[in-house]
Length: 229
Image (cartoon, rainbow, N blue to C red):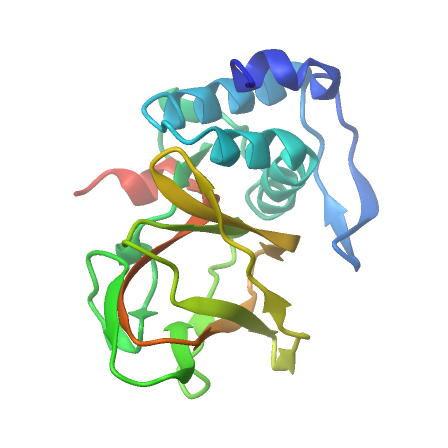
């Protein structure tokens, strides 16, 4: 059972210089990041997961911490602002976990305040955004989605498909495993949604009923966009 994320990712705590690198198959420019910023990033994730009882979720962040760093570096390329974590103010960068109100459309509905939905039919269903109204990532923000947690009595989706910048990706089979009090499914390759990305996500229901399917991941953004509730 992993302990603190910070302890598990010590090898990543170093200075990163500005570079052009390939991230999940796409070449992009990544800003520099100091070892102090990386350590602060790990500490923020520790705080985010402090009340998260699910060990599998913590393991996902540890296994993909390189992509967590790359997301912040990609956003920093646009903002030119330091990552200041929980102390971030103004244009400084921080990260938050994923909530329904960050997305324009959840399960085809706007203004959602959670990820619950009751399917009355099987088949493909819009999850985040739609084909006619995809989600749009702002110039100075970015998302990383590592997998999904299902809090309902049993999983009812078994496949997911990402369409990014108009290109449909091959669907992923979702293999949910019971871990303590929830079902967790990791994406074979995390979804890296950098600045100015357009995307939408569909889920395939293999049986009907209620779900509470929460994406596992983070959003990187400027602190000024978190100054009002």
